[in-house]
Structures are given as C-alpha cells and as structure tokens.
Image (cartoon, rainbow, N blue to C red):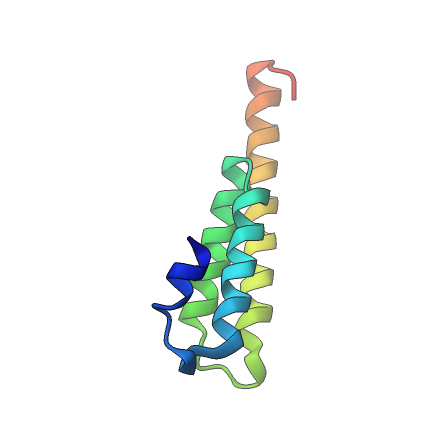
Length: 88
C-alpha cells in the first residue's frame, strides 16, 4: 500500500516530506496519554503560529510551549489528586 501511495506524492516534495511522515509515525506510537496529545497539539500550534521567526526559532518556541503546558497540566493534576484523596 505504501508503494502505491508513494506514486501519488509529487517528487518535488522530496525527502522532507518523508521525514515528516516518519516523525508522524513515531508521534502516533508515543502519544499514549491525553497529556502527551495535548502537549503535541500545543507544540504544533506554537510552531505554526511562530513560523515567521528567523533561524527556525519556531521549533524552539514550540518545545518550550509544550514543556510549559505539560508541567502546568501535570501540576494541576497532582493538585487535584491531592485534594480529592486519589492516588497517582
């Protein structure tokens, strides 16, 4: 099926597109919790929103935004678990 679908992709897209597909495959296998999905979404949105930054700083900004959002959500979850008496 991959060989058939590869014929539909223009050659001008090059190896950059193949790299994106490989990273998407890795993302799908690693995104096993809601927190990871949210952080991936935040990283993607931040990277697209900051695309015009020079030196590909949008990638650095995306990483920082995803880490900050993950830390914020994790601390909120721990605070909720502590107040409700649940175990982590």
